[in-house]
Structure formats: C-alpha cells, structure tokens
Length: 269
Image (cartoon, rainbow, N blue to C red):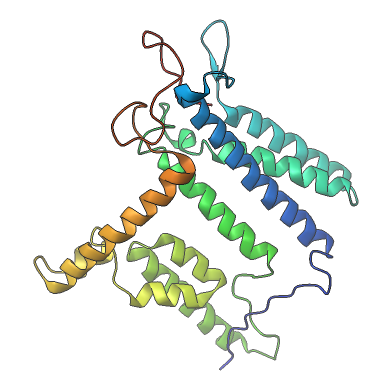
C-alpha cells in the first residue's frame, strides 16, 4: 500500500521560488503586524505609557477598531494583486501589505463573532487562537507541506482513498479528544494527529465525556494533565497577548488603563 511521503521541497537558495518568497513575506508581515498592534493595545492599557497614542474615536463617539484598517488593507492589496498580477518585487510589497492587514484583522477576530467588544475578555482569547492557527497553517504551506501529500509512484485510487480516510479519521479523533490544533496540523503532517489520537483527551471534550467514567483513574489522569496543559497555555498567551479581564484587577499583566478613573476605559488599541 502506498505510503504518505513527507516532502519538504526547499530550493537550492532558500525562498528562491517566487510564490514561496511572497508567502514568506506575507507570513512575516502578518506576525510582525499582530505583535505590533497587540503591543500597542497593551501599552495604551497601561498607565506607564500614557504618552502612547490611544484608540481612534470620532466626535460622535463612533469607535474605529483596527480591524477596519486591516480589512481595507486586505481588500486593497488583494484586488491590486489579482488585477495586475505584478512581478517581483511588487508582488512581495503587496504580500507584505496583505499580511499587515491580516494581522490587524485577526488580532480582533473575537469581534467578528461577538456583538460586544470582548477584546480584553476571556472570549477575546479566540483572537489569539486564530492567529496561532493562521501562523501554523501558513508556516506549513511556506515550508512546502501540503494536505494528503502522496508520493507519485503509481498509487492506485483505492490506496489513495484509504490513506486520505485514515488521515481524516485520525484528525477527527484528535479534535474529538479536545485537540483541534493537532487535528488540523495532522491534515498536513499525519503523525501529529496520530499522536493526538492515541494520547489522553481533555476531560471536557466529547471523547472525555463519553469514555472517561466519573471517578475513574483515566478521568483523574486526564484532569491532572489538562490542568498543567491549560496553565502552560495561559502563561504563554498572557505573555504574548496580555491577560484578560478588566485592567487594574489582580492578576492582570497590564495593570491599568491610561485614562482618568472617571473616563470610560478604552478597551482597544
């Protein structure tokens, strides 16, 4: 039976391929713009940086989130790239603009799905999760990975179908065990979803609720392990994106906002 081939086609001179180079520029711009705008928001939140420019608000009180500028930049650069199909280096400039717009937009991903401003709340953590997912998928593509990458050695349709089904099933099991990121990466790198599928699932996942009996040793191990995992994830997310909650509350990394107590606290930018 055919085996999945893990091919990483890096040119003799790294990023010598035009498409790969543009993808790398886009991904780098995306990450840098996200880090910049998130750092800017955290500085605006802290009284130590009262000199840092605040959020953009109109005279009528209409707040313009930075995802607005990101959407405009994504639409503009995307349209120009499709309409003109420029050669290098202009395509790289457009890729950089698209990446910057995507970084601004995904930093406020939570505002896509909630009707209220949840930037500094627990719900707002979905923005950081979206950036992590986009970065991993973009990085895998730039490095040359592709979903269901099979060796071109006369693989039969039946064998190819079996491999794809197994790959998808492993990813599905990992997701059902509360590991959506491992399941998603497993579409590109099946070994990752295989590891996620055979290890303990999260206690609150569909798998945990169905197969981990109350007061069982397996449930206790799952709860203990996921307490450590979630604590580690929270530390990393807090260090990069800032702690959720009202500025100034105990435990928050960014301790206060830069406006007087009587003023309405800007929770963005």
